[in-house]
Amino acid sequence: MKRTVILIGVLLLTTVVVEAKNVDLVTLPGRDSVQLTIYNSEDLTLAKETRYVTLKKGANKLQFSWANTLIDPSSVELRLLDHVDDVEIADTVFPGQKPQHLIWNIQSKFEGQVKMEVTYFTSGLTWSMDYVAISDPDETVLQFDGYVRVYNNSGEEYDNAEIRLIVGKINLVEKIADLARRQGIPMPAPSSGRFNKMKRGVASLSFEKAQAESERGGGAGGRADRAGIVKEGISEYFMFSVEGSETIPNGWSKRMQAVDTEDVKFDIVYRMRTHQYGPRPVRFFIWRNDTEHKLGDSPLPDGQVNLFRDNGDDGLSFLARQQIRYVPIKAEIEINLGPDDLVVYETNRANVKRFNFSFNRHNNVNGWDETAHWIDTIRNYRTKPITFELRRIWHGDIDYDSEIKTKLFDYRTPEVTLTVAARSKKQYPATVTQHHGANKKQDRVKLVHVPAARGGVGFAGGATACISVGVVAFGAIRRSDSGRSGERRRTSQ
Image 1 (cartoon, helix red, strand yellow):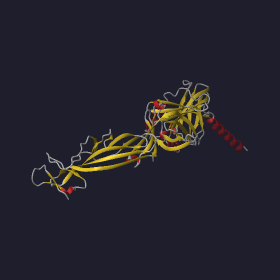
Image 2 (tube, helix red, strand yellow):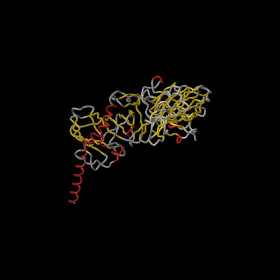
Image 3 (cartoon, rainbow, N blue to C red):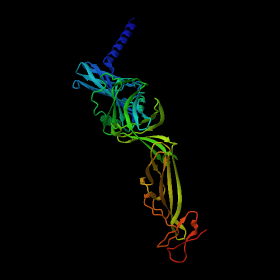
Image 4 (cartoon, rainbow, N blue to C red):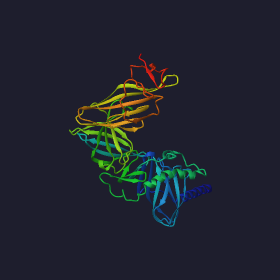
């Protein structure tokens, strides 16, 4: 009987010790507010939560858990928002028996509620843009709408959250999702603290810029019928702020309108670029992200554009779907509609001649020039005039001449823009002289005025022979053994 009493006493004493050990441990209460800044380029989100915690005077223990989420535990920070002089965060403990928990040891001279802010990086929250463009039946103006969709696969429920979307890129040494999935918190090496500080500093620096104006109100009031999007430029980044607050449960997504513009004027351009689009001219709708086109208040993030035309009978005709890259302010948006059967292009070469031959010391031809007359023909079977851009790459040392104004896109690509009347055709002539062999100096196209080539053979001071292809072969040209060194003789086959 005595042994039983002693055992009961020991058990009671053990229970009291355990209870005394945990009497000050408080689980972090629910959120009062939450702000999510989603940086899509690196699957990175900065979460800022405010919570009211009741403290007693003396030592307090506050527990935070991130089980089944993608929160980076090394990024979790607690900051006091009031009673800063009376409350001190002594240290942070990661208990070994609870690998997905941490405990803040807090010393307080104040008893009552204290407002605190918890910040951390998490993964699994992403966003994307998609656009819808609808042209009028005459294809002169269009309605352009943009939508942002936010996805929550973070493992955490976010109720009534302020949402900010960052357009820009950073480089992370480690992925947040990888940090969140690692087991336990290993003891850091002496130098790892500095390394982790540098690593998190890269991400924190960009978010400090994005939060420069974050103290403005927004989201605390009532919900509007439809959330608006406020756009702000911050340094090299751009931030879309969703007005009001949104609730996005884990595993869900939400789509909100970010761009709503009507009567956007656009141009229709046909482009012939064999190296880029293939052997047929393709049709483009082009407009600019600027105020003249009722846009331009912000860059446009990457996204998919679905283009339709109003068929005039309460219906839409699908024209194209294209992924566009980030569009800065004042940059163009180009949508490729593909080849058009009502616009035909063909090119022909004529009057090919070779001349200006040079010889090596063995009296063999080692250089010559070749000229040809090219005619590009564009036939427009549409009922409206069209704008046609022709761009062609030439390889080698080229002299290029045309009676129609031509410019160089780059060192080997002439470019010309033509207007072709409705139900008519237009020709673009050009004379192309290519230098071969020893006559070739460099790979480039030079815009010149090429004089008409002379027929026959000239002999004045280093004279050149001008030969029509097919009449005389290269092997029939040789230096004369007699007479002046500058003379050349042409023999027929």
